[in-house]
Length: 438
Image 1 (spheres, rainbow, N blue to C red):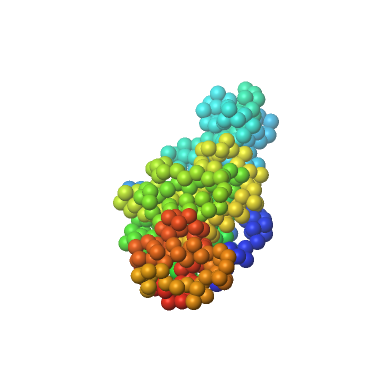
Image 2: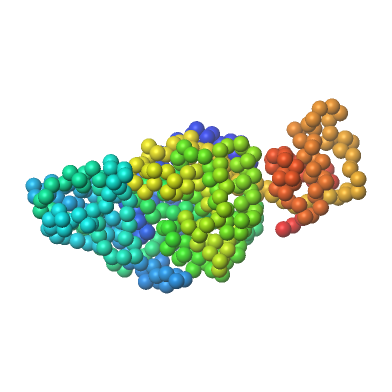
């Protein structure tokens, strides 16, 4: 079975529903760049795809960074003088600034207010805030709630620890016919954020589950890593072998209702850049192709100049461009099963093109070979037996000079990649083409 077979058998409705249920399962966990919530998430992924858990000790130097201390949180709250929890980590893990240092204190509202974070422009939403690399503490709540807090003495508790431990990440490796790799990466460090975090996780997990049953040309490496520090740690530990990565995608924000967005690799003309653009164009779906910028997700680490890997970022609505981004409104209600399924279908199509893109050399390059006597032309009509696109046959014959890939031929001819590939396979089966090893 190859990826074409997976695509043909895929029930998008069933797939979208299953992915959405995984979003709901993972949503309550308090993830961070380290800690038990992250490990719980990785264990869940491991139940659905073959995953190896990797750990990098706190204090390890990774490129220009140092793996931070591990954060553990047990409880957090703000109580009023009547003992009522007016802010409660138990109700939402967004209520605590992620990576907050421990604190136990009593203070006035004036003393507490500098540690309270809100969104005045979205007064009913709770923001997501972090303090990974600066030891501090804080709480997040709706602006409407904060403005209603009376003058009072408040009991403040963040029952957390910052101690030596490890940074955890998950790695799924699916061997193919060659050691050349396709890298699929997603970040797993955000707490209860459904589109910006969980949608990418469940898409990567589902892709890995489908691909493990396939006969693959490339080897596939899936990384489930905490943002920034995770990719930097992985690159530092695997610097000697990163040249195996021939194509790559970072997956994020793939579950909302928006059209597709693809951010190119730093190279700008990598094969994966061209393939994603071609797949989206052939589908005629709303989409945007954006140039690379050194801001965003972990593509900026994989594309840093010392590595310059061919890795782009596949999204729907990009980070920061939907109002719910990094707020409590990025909940499972923002994510749509149909959107998740559509993202899965496009990604499978992209991988299918990468798998199928070949170069051929014509075995009969002088003049046009007679296709009719080989059964490749019908006597009448536009398609040969087996549904081979006749015009695609002619384009493939003409451009199979060892220099043009099937993707090149599809782009120049305007024929669908699947038609071009089908034509090449039919011609090769009749001895008119030979594949050029890459």
